[in-house]
Length: 460
Image (cartoon, rainbow, N blue to C red; front, top):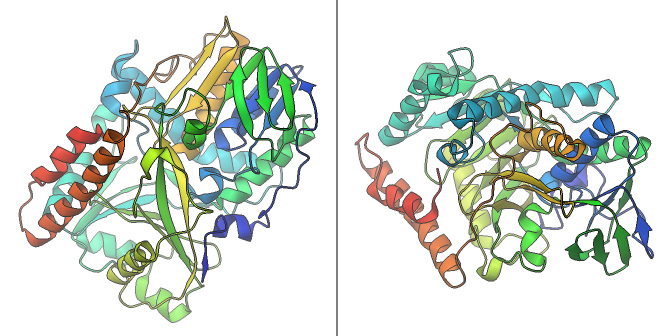
């Protein structure tokens, strides 16, 4: 089993090392983007559509897709993005939140369509997502989610309840009681999307520098260890890696998502499991597992593990602790006891979480400085939409995209250490204890421990 060394997705896509030239000396552009993840890449894409005469440079500390974009589970989904109540504080109120969700739902099919149009294979499988419940409390939360769909502007064609038997028609999960299904999810190979999008941008004149670690950003100037880029407009799209930059230590918390992928399963094992359509799966627990089926018949399983490291430190070359790998293996065996797959690769990825759990995009026209991100793990569809918002902000246009509730908002800073670490650890353990309590109980009530954890973390 390979542990760390980026992700299975990056290895599978043949992208384990930087291939583009670093920044050698000083350069200039009309727009400079810091970060070659999905946010930076989609911002560049929409800028080439909106302002095709502007020159664009992207500077990346490692390589295209190195962060969450090349390591996440690969769901382009219409699930809610961000804390609804926080986003509803904007001028459009709940109507703006509904418009944002609809925009992300549109991205579920728009992104694969765009890639197909340009001959880029991202192993897209549009099969929707399924949330499953294995406790009475989880089932009650699933029912509540379905019941409130109208408040999101959704109907049964967008989200519907599944009985136990209906879940089993999709997939045979041990101990399942019921669930919900939405058609709004396309599972992809995320590293192939990042790499293909970067190559598409380069055909349109966008220059991408890898191994160009940014040391500082100021109006009109991006400083790296290899040189500078002068640009009147600068977008910081550094997401979970923002705390490495001066003055941003508490702006966002880098959280870890722990992932394992199996070797391809046998046909007998797939016959036992079902899951023929390859829906995205996740549990109704407070610390749930997320799962995908790859094009070549593997299972990808993600969970939190130990999600936060003291001082907002990043991952250690993507390596997972042995205890976290065993926890994920046990989770896989619990979900699918009829299968005994071999684990091929384990890794972790970082995603950025703002203090109020709500993403934001902004541009200060006086300084030319902008920033975008804060998806808390729901960034594949959202980054596509946010890139469009940023492009219209640069163009000075008032559009549907600039009226979305994440525009020009600011999240508060996280607490200083050790409070940040204590809060994260406490929240993590409370959610795990709450799941254990709900497994032992036959009650439909959510554990008070989970309610306390949400109060501490601010998580929706």
